Image (cartoon, rainbow, N blue to C red; front, side, top):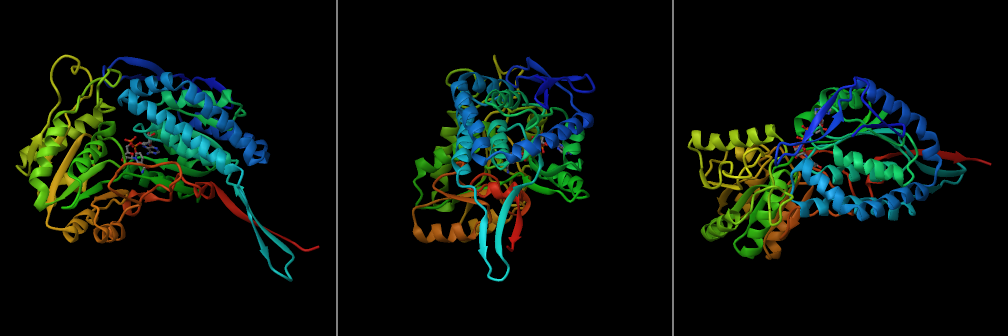
Length: 476
Ligand code: NAD
């Protein structure tokens, strides 16, 4: 792929490239330009020049281009999903869903565009007072590798619909799908400079997006530590920041829960995308009275998960996306054994044998019997490892669930109205699911409380996050 700057696909100013590899095989897929600060500056310049014409179009005219792009994305879903699986590792059916999810988001903002309105204030004596919503200007988007298409959609959908232009930085281990989606947007009629894509390291490309004074807002999705750095870098220019950071979502299974349904929920919630989802189930709390049966059933279901190359038929879980992620998971699981804190119920190592030699595979893993202060509960484990604890009742479950610096998602599994009311009220999270986990349709505001971030994406209010109010008072 190349950088997209001002409607042209070009090499990085440095002339250097980096390799994008398939995490299931280690094979090189393509080279991408090793962009740097200079490329971000060119992209911000181009986005600044494109802003006047783009922001002067009607919201509907802008969003129509997104709508046409969404149609083309659906038409090319098979190829896009194969590319996403090749660079990211997820099973092909998850990639197909993610590509459709990107199209859903663009269509959703197209539907909202017709209703974009300001306000009118009736203030006798002051003339006619209207409150306009104006786009911010050039916005920066920094995205991770775990759900690149969806997260690109969450950022470009509301930003471009409201008339902003953008400099977008994909992650280095999964930039190709973003590049392909950008070229579809161009083909659908996006004018040069409205969306610019700069690939390269976070330390150079990402930091320049955060610092560059031409960029008025930065929307970042990634780890909490990186988010903090982005906020610090953005502070001197007093730019707006949206931070969608990590999570350590608790799942609480009460004694009246539908156990087979909750087992499926835990399996999908944790092992979808090889456990590399911000709102994955990262801690499981089961009421004592059903714990033995629940863990027995969960173990057997986890052992039925087929691990392999996401392109192969019948594979439920692919590899981790990158070697650093695999090393971290291995370290976290090895520490359980070294400190004799907890017991590996199943998994706990890389699968062996043909097909697994060169990929970043790890078996789906359950760990039980951990102490409350185990790092598996306090840290965000970004891989297929699920720590399970037992609790006496909902009071204890809520104390344990909220004892975390994160607050992204949470779920409770029960049909008891009193337990639902107490759990939905008491859980500290940006989204609480009941008898489900992980679902985030385009209509709902998404983001976290506490250390999981600042601001919300998705949903209709995201339009407000990419605009600011301007009051006009007219006296005739
Ligand atoms: P990461 O923080 O390592 O990287 C995210 C992006 O930031 C990448 O493009 C990276 O190149 C860039 N980056 C790295 N250092 C930077 C710096 N100093 N300045 C600017 N940009 C920099 O995260 P990751 O490993 O790619 O993704 C996994 C994390 O993302 C997990 O913590 C996960 O929970 C989180 N996540 C959150 C959400 C959400 O909406 N809350 C969604 C998906 C993923």
